[in-house]
Every structure is written in structure tokens, then in C-alpha cells.
Amino acid sequence: MNQTLPQPTSIRRPAVSLARLSQPNGYRFDGDSVHLHARLTVLDHTAYQHSWALQLWACPAVPALAGDLAGQVVAEVALPPMSEVADEIEHMDMSTFARPPAGGAEHFMVLVLAAGVAGRFDEVHDIVAYPSRQQFLQPRMRGSIDHRIEGARVHLSVEHIENPREPANHSGTLALELWALAAPYAGGAFEGTHLAGVSIGSLAGQAEFAPASFELPLFSPPAGDWHLVLMLREWTSAGYITRDFSNFITPVHDRSPGVLTTPKPGKTEAVQVKPPVAVKPVAKVTSRARKTSGLKHAQKKRKNTSTESNRSATD
Image 1 (spheres, rainbow, N blue to C red):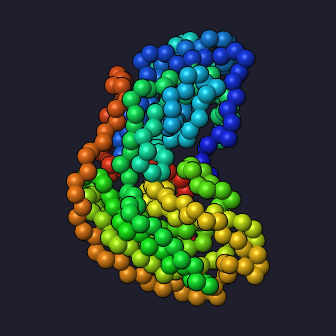
Image 2 (cartoon, rainbow, N blue to C red):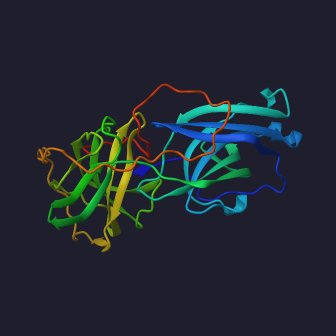
Image 3 (cartoon, rainbow, N blue to C red):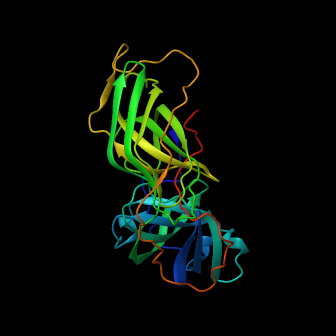
């Protein structure tokens, strides 16, 4: 199964920048959406022959130059054709779905002006890096996380599954999914085999499932060496996206016959979890991006932010 996002595996730097980002510019998160505001300046008339997009990246460090850009694309929106831009300076103000990185790490946000084609805007002409760190409040796993494989079954246990958002901010439906990947998961897009999964319902803000323990049918990946990762995923308007994850250290081997086996077809068993309980309040984290003019006020939405695909845990 291929879980795809517009994540460039590499970026290209043009010999000459054809356009750049000018002031004012910025971003603002609003629930599952992000509002991007930028002022574009055309530097060369050949820019009108290219297709362009604005991207918002989450990076582990502030890139000094466009060639140092590394991280995850949180949002991307294609711009109107430059041929429709009346002036050499144009203001852009638009919103799109946001796919922030899974986990609780802090990131530096970078606004990127890129050229290319739909699905692959990888020629970076300019960047604006914001100095304040950004952290996303997302459903998460905490404490001991473990798995045990017994033939065609797998036992999964998570000490705490919690929603650190405000009390009235309910999560979408949450799911635990066990995946086999060719390398340890580091966030973003991935390719692998879905081994097991279960839907565990929604959580109010400041509530948790504790503990959560499941015994599930196990499906085997193709023959080979695999790294197992347990993902906590949330249902959004873009489908299920990964909010948190835990890599299991020891790789598994499937050698036909091997460690993993395919269970006989049958009905998935119902799994019981304890009712959610309240957890201690978590400090609210808000966007620290610089304020910008021209951003439109959106209607209030469910206050969470998001990542990847549309596969259900029970598929």
C-alpha cells in the first residue's frame, strides 16, 4: 500500500530565480486548514512560461539557503497561471488543507515558492523561513508501547492514548494501525504493508484511553525484512492521517514460511477498550507565526491539524 503526499524526494535550484517572495507574507493555522499569504515579484518574463505553487514546509532546522531545504511539506497550493497576473507584483491569499508532521516535535516553518508540474513542484526559486518554532497539538501515544506476534495474531498495547487539545475539541475517529515498512518510519509519506488495525473511537480534549490493549488478526507482508511501526491515525476531511507513531526496534523477517503468517479469512473480532478518562490539562500551543495583513478570517472549525491518506484501519 502506498501512502502518498506531495513530498519531494529532492529539490532543484534553478540557475536563475525567476520570481521571489516579498513582504508581506505569512501563514496561519485554523483547525485542519492553513491560510497562506504572500506577495510575489516576477524577476524575469520567462516566469510566465512556468507553473507555480506556494508550499509550507515544516523543517527540523532553519535553512540558510533554498538548497538547504529539508523537511515535510505541510501544505501546497497551485497558483494561477502567471500569464493571468496583470502586474509584476501580485498578492496571493489562499487556504488549503494542512498536513503537519506526526509526533510532538517542534518545527521551523518555511514558505516556499516553487515551480514544476502538478504533484511535483520541486524547483525552488525562493524561501522565507520564520524564526519561531511551531508545535502541533495532536492525538498521541504515551508511556509503554508494545506488540507481540503469536502466529496469525498480534497483541498491541499502548499505556496511554490521549487528546491534548482543549476540552471541547473532540478528535476525529482514532485508529491504531500496524505497518511493515522497508525502513523505520520518520514521518510523511510512506510505502508498506498494512498488517493490522482497529478503530478506537473519538476522544474529547483532555481525555485519554488508558490503558489500551488489543488482540487482532495479523496479515503478513511479502517475503523480506521489515520494520514494524505502530501509527495512531485520525479521521479528517482528507481521510485518515497519521498523528503519532512508534517504531519497534527489532526488524521482522518473513521467509515463506516465516515469522509472519496470513490468517484465514474471517470476521474481525470486536475489541473492547476502557472508557476515556480525563487527563491533566496540557498547555495550549498556538501558532507563533508572524502576523500578516490580508489574511481572510475563516469560520471556526474543529481545532486540530493533520497528515496523509484515506485508508481506514479496518480495511
